[in-house]
Image (cartoon, rainbow, N blue to C red):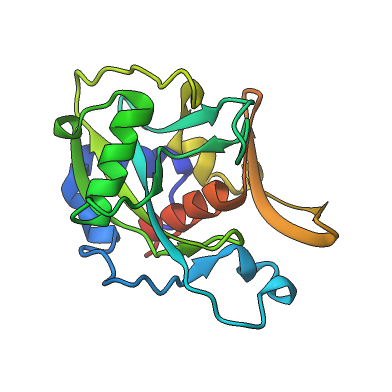
Length: 217
């Protein structure tokens, strides 16, 4: 499978459905508290805090839409938010005390941000937990969206909801590694640019983790 083209991999995923996805992903979420295996510090070990901090649990949904080829659904955040304004992200957020699991966190936040009801999401599995430089431990939940889901973006938080073909994200030619100065430090990160949408940081890194899993031999 690793020698196939990005397009053929996508077609195989569509034909194999959720069972093929499940065979490639973590079948159970990591136990709490999360111990991330991936994170912002992978490319920036020099920026890791010298003292251990308690990471705040969070979860995002990596939503897949099966058309003739699979697409990944993403959100563009509004520009007036105090955190991550204007950035492309997966729907998701910090766990609430009332959430019974991080899967519930991902599904609840997805409904709040996009209007997609949990009944239209089939959880296929999980990616490696991800540590952000802002102190969060994020569980990426991979979900397949059923036909008939409706979008109703949260006007205060979501400026746009759009889709990217999975084949575009799997093509190595579309991945970039970049660096920029942030708060006096150089930070390196991965990015994609698709039809004017700039996908970078944790979101791009999680997409790469997803690609590694589904293209593994």
